[in-house]
Image 1 (tube, rainbow, N blue to C red):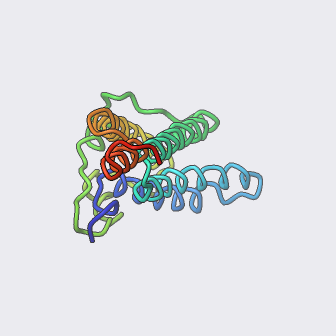
Image 2 (cartoon, one colour; image 1 turned 30 degrees about the horizontal axis):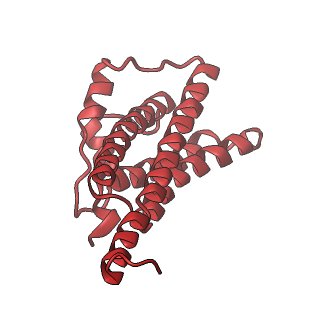
Image 3 (cartoon, helix red, strand yellow; image 1 turned 45 degrees about the vertical axis):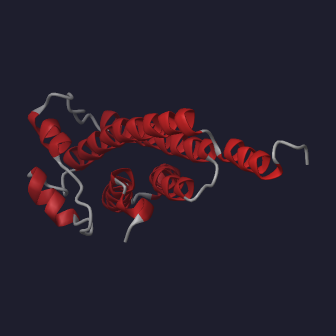
Length: 182
């Protein structure tokens, strides 16, 4: 496969998107929740698509900007899941809850398709339970935020050390012309 599809941040974004669609179909099918469903699915989609789009950018600053937009989408999605739980009187897991720790230990596998059944079995969570699935997604979004923060720091470090597309293009042009203008 190669490229952005092998990035852990992308792999996890696919899982979050798929689970968000599943969550909305199962627990927000009521027409009154239509706008919320649209927002949640679009936030999950935006997180995934901006990683893919950013990976194809020539400009490092554009790639970092799109990755940052992706990061923001997951923050928005966490808010939607927390709203869902709060409005229904359901519990938001503490970050040290044993279930949350189990989810945080989950690792996406490179080279194998995301399998939601395996994720359900691995975490020992019933995806038919709205509290479990919402909290699972909150944990995955926080994990994704952490991974994207690391990803952005890495991109920033590379940019500082190597420069950006325009800088490097200008340097090559200067070398080609021997430092002459034009």
